Amino acid sequence: MLKNKTIFILSLMKFDGLASTNYTIARELAKNNTVYYVDNPFTTRDCARQKDSLEFLIRKPHFSSGAAGVMETDLPGLKILICPPVLTINFLPEGWLYRTLLKRNERRIIKRIKSVIKREGIKDYIFINAFNFHYPGVGKALNPGLSVYHAVDPIIVPYDRRHGLQSERELVKSSDLVICTSKALYDQHIALNPETYFVPNAADFEHSSRASEPGLAVHGSVAEIKGPVVGYLGNIERRMNFSLLQQVAKNNPDLSFVFAGPVAGGLIPDGLNSLPNVHFTGPVRYEEMPAVLKGFDVCIIPFAKDEVSATIFPLKLFEYLGAGKPVVMTDFNMDLRAFTKDTVAFCRNADEFGTAIRKALTEQGPVHTAQRQAVAKDNTWERRGEEFAEILASGLTKKNASF
Image 1 (cartoon, helix red, strand yellow):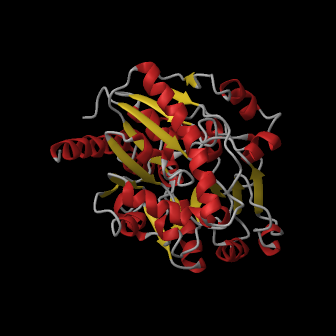
Image 2 (spheres, rainbow, N blue to C red):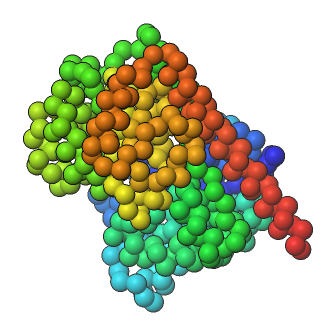
């Protein structure tokens, strides 16, 4: 058990952004340790573009060099550390200029972290780079008791790939431990670092299970849509198999297909968007998730099958199961089968997908709900936090024994 340690987590995800693996793991570790969640720094471009946003105004008082930068949270063991803004440099080509300016940016982050270490008299600590591959040198410069890289997703966006692929390789090689959220990421990174481990994503069962409460009203964006409703909750973006969805929706005109979440521009084909039984509700706040899921009769994860999708361990899978809903998904990552205990249909094509939806509509009721929720209970964030902490504790013991 990892207890009474100080942990710094430099995260790619903002503390007040969408629900994320990074912040959730930080909250779990903070139950028995002191965790400083180092918020992904604003760049000078961010400051100019978001100067009137709530996110900027919350952070602005902590930007000055003399500020402590520490914000309290609802958990006594979890604190947010805000860094001063850094230069906008990602547009630069890879090379000596980019790497030189990157070191300058990293020094700003390091200085803020060291100010906390000095002020609080911290003697020993763990540093986790939580998928913030944009700043690969911070952990090495801090010389922590244990250096960890948490690989959450494949690096696929061109903005991230420009410098991220090289930086991530550096992180994987230089870290004492690497922890991955999917088996495919594990297989990729263990080739560079033998101290690589697999801790998959999970879900907040207490939150998602509210969807099965009789007294909860269906979310307004779904309540008036004719059932049966086949629903997807999450980002509607490039990883989805839109051609499969179009065929399935066209073949099943008596079903309503609802997509709840932000839509990436220009990706939805007109043939899908124009179907009368297809509905896009727009973004949904995390706290509204149970009410949305309550309105779904069947939940789907229609990701395209490719090298990128093979590394995905989607949070929504266990959110769906926690809500007690039947789940139909494509066969993009068959490693997930071992975690779902035959409660989820994996489909190879549109015909199988449509048939599985029809079958799922017949598998309703308390017995099926209980079976799905039992699987979700085995994949909670509490459990993942314990697994994560055990790896950190073992890593500390192993590293200390080597000296």
